[in-house]
Length: 246
Image (tube, rainbow, N blue to C red; front, side, top):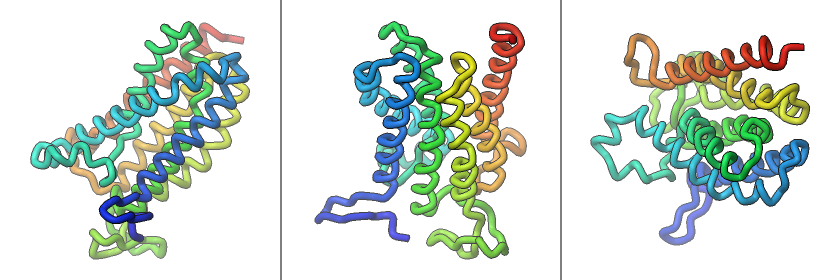
């Protein structure tokens, strides 16, 4: 598939960029809708939007650059070429969490309530970004003889469409993320569960990717997934065992 959706003279509009924009719009719409359940005004949500988009893109790009640092050291100009793809979801989440903490302190609203309101947006982001990765022909898996194997322009044989595996799992997670966000048992209930589930999915999905292996048999993104999964599970356990024990 051609990764260019539209070309106007020298200007190229890529499917990847369109999908990222859709992810932000749908994620924001869900966040704004959910925020009302927590008593967060639409004006507060609106004031966060542009800042959060910038933070997420910077964090996501930084994570991707770090994970592929040998390439970017050799090709530093590629760091700003977002049209070529390359956003790390873990970097986006971590950057948003850090920024959200300080922003909510300044705005004097609950950090965890806002996090719960944004939880479905994480899943939406995974869906659209991975579809973009598929169209770009990147982050595919190893060779396969399975009937659903896909031959990309950069591969000589059919490979696992690992991008679509994550799209499918994210569609399974999405209704749960929406339900948790709309009916949280306590602040942080939805966000921590979405973070835990996606971290587990990411850990296993990375076995279906063509990555440079280091630190043993795991790649950097798997190590990050383990850290996020352990941290979110530990905090869930603490909240349910001690702070919000029924």
